[in-house]
Length: 161
Image 1 (tube, rainbow, N blue to C red):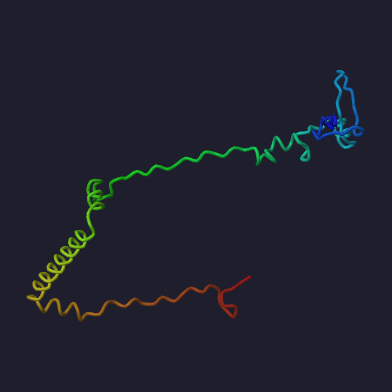
Image 2 (cartoon, one colour):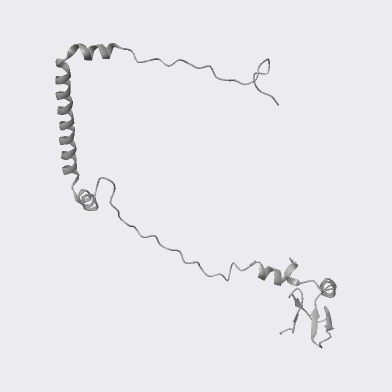
């Protein structure tokens, strides 16, 4: 069985038969009001959108729409490869495609080269022995400690309220 219900002009709640008031406006438009509260507020010419408990306010402030909302589309980020300072894009691709053994061999060769360079530098500096030995024995300069400024003086130790 279907019950004929009306909608309150202010709150937009359902009004079941035997409840509410029917008011006829000056322009001969019938207005159904569900409660004395709705009637009173309509007589005071209050706007339904400014009353928090009305459906008009809820619609205006997007309340209770969680089940009807559609899923927002998210933008997928695109990966872009760029050249790094000191290495072009082609070099990066070459290194990525190289096997790990080749890279390990290159690393070892570079380490051997660095060690050889150090050894040659040591041999050169070893010929001028006196200058280098005096530098090694000289102790590094000690920094003088500066006392902390604790602020204030007296018993309180710098904490004032």
